[in-house]
Amino acid sequence: MESMEQYWEAIQGGVFTRCVDEQDGAGNVRLTNEAQCIIKRFLPDIINIVNTIKSNRIEPYIDKFHRDICSQCESVNPDGSCELRARADCCLDRYFPLIVEVIEEVSGRSLPS
Image 1 (cartoon, rainbow, N blue to C red):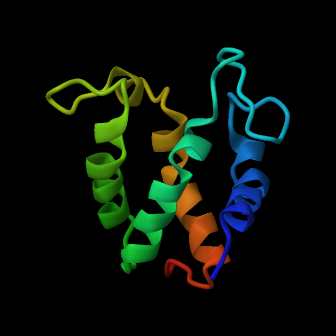
Image 2: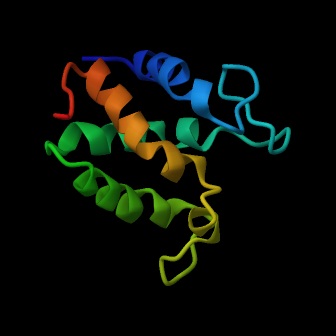
């Protein structure tokens, strides 16, 4: 079984190089001094989603992500809409397919092309 640290290191190497908010390769973002990378904040939930869904399509992962994780986020409105997501300003939503791919690789699975 993979450790949280293994997943986190893989995400740092496979996702942060593409993140526009990330500043130092360690998951620290430029948003505020108090801000923690939202990916790191929800990492256990993300790993659970990826490891419980077995699909060759990304949509089931995204649907569960929106139901389980977005519902916990303070940016989501009571109707489920999210201004950050609508503006493509939520890095977790923006990079979720890539995050799924990285977690699948660490877990020894991969989404078919």
